[in-house]
Image (cartoon, rainbow, N blue to C red; front, top):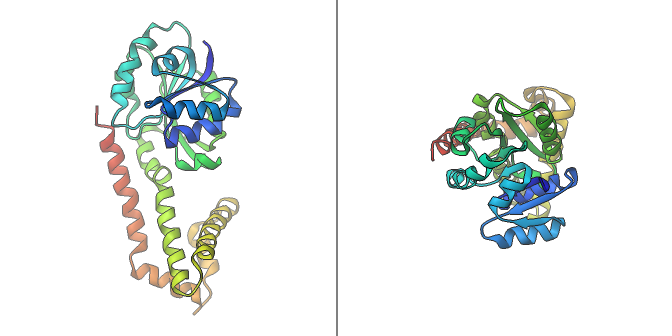
Length: 268
């Protein structure tokens, strides 16, 4: 094979992952429709670009970074190329909701496949990369994938039956976090803080809170209680959040996203 890593699809997520893993691989080949996106990213990352068939034929680790609505078309297009290969390779799919079984049916043969649910935070090396392999993936390929995924942030192996559920949180969660940050900033603006400062305060507060939760290992409820003084301003705000149904709204957001993940996987 000519390349260690290849990407079919260089949209927002594909580009984010490619940028993160570039230093962890010896060589890379990119493909996209329209091809201009692949050309521009290849120039930025000092790697090569080509078409889907070249990636399918010449790369050891093949990222299918396309949306679930077109995964079937893409897989059927490259399946004959993959079937003709005699060397070892692994296909890595980031298509939400598309099961290992469905991918196997689309690609045919005994293809080694890793299913991944990434998130957009790969852009800054702080992603959550949920993944599960099929039985054809070798121990060597698993280790290499973990190395690539770790370059994007945190990798977490999960059972496939949980990847849609966990992915609804980690994959869709950044959007939910941005909504919360915007609302917090709006609140500060309503209290007289300028927009630019409010936005910085909201983002840093969320980042610091996440860091504290991860490094302390404490339960979220305990951490919340440590901030809330008796008859203080924080518990007043928490009461307002409860009255507004924030907790129920966030739970329902994850549940709705989980349901949609599963529905997307049924599209062939």
